[in-house]
Length: 247
View 1: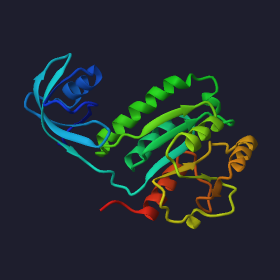
View 2: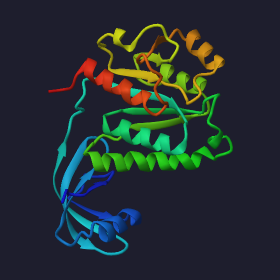
View 3: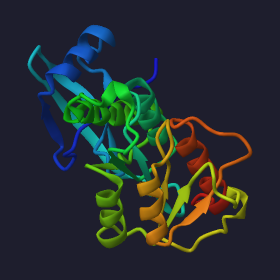
View 4: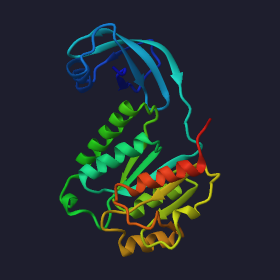
């Protein structure tokens, strides 16, 4: 059986007293770990370590940690996906898959054309599900880098953050009505690339006007219209292929 992986934000001590009740229940009741079993701990920042279970109760686990290792970012460039809230199940799927294939930063915004299933929803509750999905994706995929995630009330506030406060050096839009295909993207020397995708019903006129005012380049991902939860995955895969990996 594959060694279980657990998020543990602090790996500096040779032993750790772990008290995440939900995770403890999963380990004990679902995976049926026992005293002396090994698990892998990771902090979401590239550090990971093998640990042995020294003590196990319903309320806590005591781990003894072996040497902490540091993994470097496997990709040459950091990537930031800027995308809207979409239907819940589709959104969770998208978050999981982006995490699994190496996204570094997630920026979510409430679109003008928000899906009707979300109009009256408390999005802060959905945010908690998003953060859980990121952790689970890292645990299952072996990714030791958890992407950062930020939430904004609209595209305007999201772009102001990306273009003024974040370290993104290259921002472009993936739009179904763009004239240029994504094959026209050139290999970049930027340290971070950000790409924007729209909701199920597409960008609104105001959102397109906003992006045009900021003079963002527009590209179309292909000859067919992709679903809102598919487009960011295709975009990130294309960028990985274009800019390569660390070797």
